[in-house]
Image (cartoon, rainbow, N blue to C red):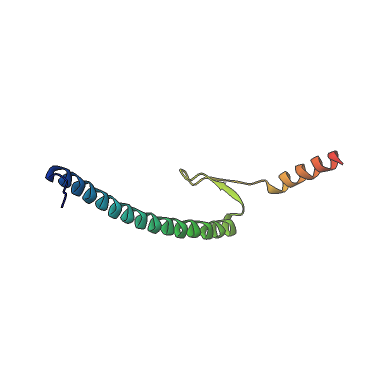
Length: 90
């Protein structure tokens, strides 16, 4: 039976071991990514829920997350401007 040299066999075996280790690491990283994405979604959901709490307490405002200062949003004025612009287009 024909055989490759011991040196070539050793090289192939080392490369195969490295590939298997890398595949295991990729699987681990992929599982970590999945967990992190799930956690991100939960934190994002909690943030959205808390925005509702803040809006109920302070109304629609912009909040400076560094200082805690807030300024009211002028949503009604913006709507009026849009209505005026639409009226001018017609």
